[in-house]
Image (tube, rainbow, N blue to C red; front, top):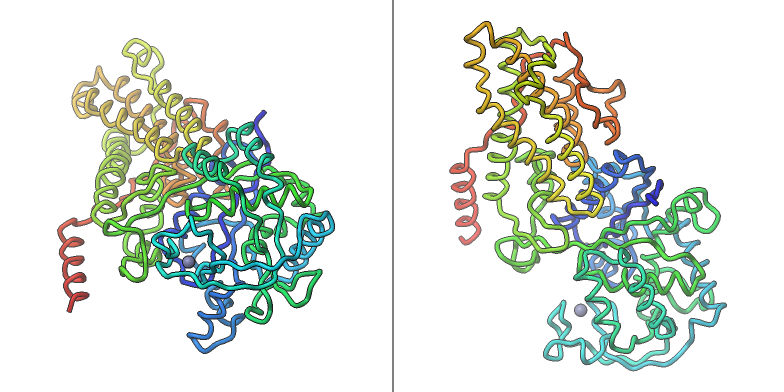
Length: 531
Ligand SMILES: [Zn+2]
């Protein structure tokens, strides 16, 4: 049965650095999924936020000669300010320094502690300060942390441990019996293969003697909570666990969106924490790949970290959202270059969609002064001019792909229909029909079908390009009073544009971008960077 309520989340972003392209992608993806589900009749709640505790924040604050809280306030604000820039419509923004969140972390810790799944023990191990965690020898690459490339230090201390090993078999079984729990499949397999090795218990505390910027353990005030144990709880503290209305309404109908580097805490720690605390397990984890810039993973040292605000400034919000969702196959890595953005904007947006929109409406002006004449049903039938079947196929394929987070395929279904309409114009050649009075009923029918097709396209692009959707609908005189989207059910019936409607001359939806200019500008930038 289709769930009628669904909770969408991004990870809470760690405030040790400013937002980059990867954060923008996760947020936009979760936003697109949320908007699509709303179109599909689902009631949604969409959460994002920032993760603000831990060693790295203390260090970053020290570097900037400020306090951890002030530092976290500043960076958290950058993440909050980015949301409207990307047209991401979240329902709530959570911060792990919020008092309500801290209270829930305490509740969850106490529950697990009381059940006997947390124990105190002395431990000597290899600790990476960058990762804020202990490493097993077998996890290291040439004796070094795989993420930081530095050798971890041997430290010995007494800490609290969470009995993850106790739940290993349960988790394997849960993953195997719930095929949609971790998607796409390659990530489910990655977690299952990791679970072939015995699971170590998780060290969930840090002594205050070396870290104070965290949530104090409810059962020992000399320790703070390990940052992941604190952070993951945001997904239920935001909903007001245990008694909040939102929690009762939306949990566990959850889709967590994360990048592949944090699959382990989300696919292993989090379900086991929930199980140990006696809380229902979330529905699903949707994992995406990395954006490579200039051929490699974004990193400060390579200097290829891409600022999403700059990209939207240059190309606009909708083209940026379109590019990200169309270019990346959800789950796999993708390459980000300005040349590919420009090429997508020019071919898919300016050429395929933008030209179609302006050609159809301009012809309707040329031949009928902008008035929608309606289809002549007899002619339509005789000459098989209806576009209702390809429109229905576009809606069905779009729905199917988007439900599976196959966003590039969902967009592909719309563009397939756009391409059919462009060919339909060439085949039926309205400019030739217009020359002969006897062909006017055919001309009316052809233009009516094209305008109806544009209606369907304007509605379907909504989750990906909300502004363009509204702009097209306003021109077509079908924008709803409150500018609300159309549901899939409302879109489906063919023939909704009313006869007699007068449609204004269209504005250009997407101006073409001069490829040479962008490339030469980039070359200049690159040579300047080398000097
Ligand atoms: Zn590390």
